[in-house]
Length: 157
Image 1: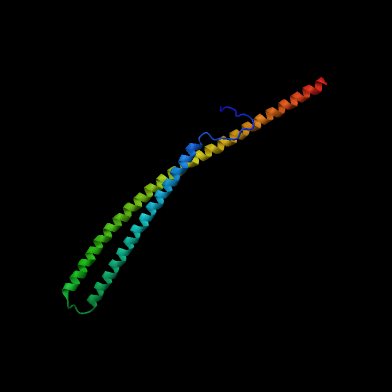
Image 2: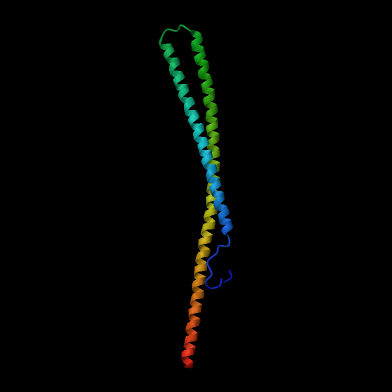
């Protein structure tokens, strides 16, 4: 059982420093999560850009075949460009997947830090309720003593 505070003393949470550290840690994890999210969105945008470039190049190549073929070198260079775009797209998809994995790991760490902070906040609330109950008990005891003394004094008179 916790020691009883003197009457009139304000509530002081013994683990306030731990709660403060956990709040700071949660904020840091939130910042890291935001950074990972920005990185993921950047990689996703790059993937979309490469995909659009590839689609435009394919459309251009198809348009070349609608007319009679006059320059085979042009067709081969466009085909080589498409192959490069395809490999770039595959590499970018791998980067997006890796970025997504890192984002999920950071999300898990953020959730853990939020849980840790929440546990400490609940503990503080419970301790505050216990303190309030203890102070009410002390107040009631004090009032009972006053009533008893008054009764004794009235009995003597």
